[in-house]
Image (tube, rainbow, N blue to C red):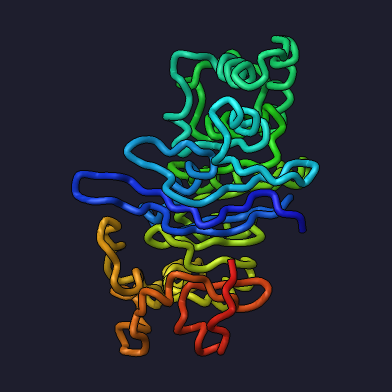
Length: 339
């Protein structure tokens, strides 16, 4: 597979009165063309901040303090997006990399018709496109998301939550991007609408070959659509690999905890357990493994929570890597760094 986006050692900090908060801490991974990746983790784990970093949209008091985000174009040229100025980045933002923002009800301007959202988006990135072509393209992408073209004349308040979400997905497709970042695309939707949206995205991926990146806290919602999964905790990537491999044999205690907390229709719910404790305060200077206060291996006395050893990822096999050096040591693979 050919790489499409390569994130290397990206760190994003927020400079607050009570200290610096590392929302993303030295994160590295590669996304390949025509795959579907899920980035999961609890609220506050750094998923949305990572997406903002990829799009270079981190706002003050936040700042990307280190790292690179490489994009590979159609000719396999490697471009560091973070080296581009605003005008240069606009040639890639929405044209090559689009996004579907969290909370559809807040992402649409309530005083603009849906048609005007499409027109403004296109003209901001391609001012030479005629109005006729914009409307024709808008009608085309609305059909992709199974909406009637009459929606163009509606205001956001005239649409249901699911319809607004589909409008945002259509808006992300208007300039034929290669990759779409979807930040919690099914939040605040009922279960039936969630599965409808996911089925729609699966169809778009299959028909258009668009690379999709899901950011969500709900591992069960996206498990049936993604190829690879990245698990984030406290600003760090703790496990990354093929979704089947990760689900079958998770190699980080946090991933195991997430999977063990998912209820099923035919399961005894009393056997399901939440991960104890709470995520850490990210303004502190960590002396031990970030997950250790909630980790069963550490709490049972089977790990010393060496912070230095958790600063790298360990390659389990060709399909998966982990940040847990204790589980890596049991498999005798410590020293084989992966990403």
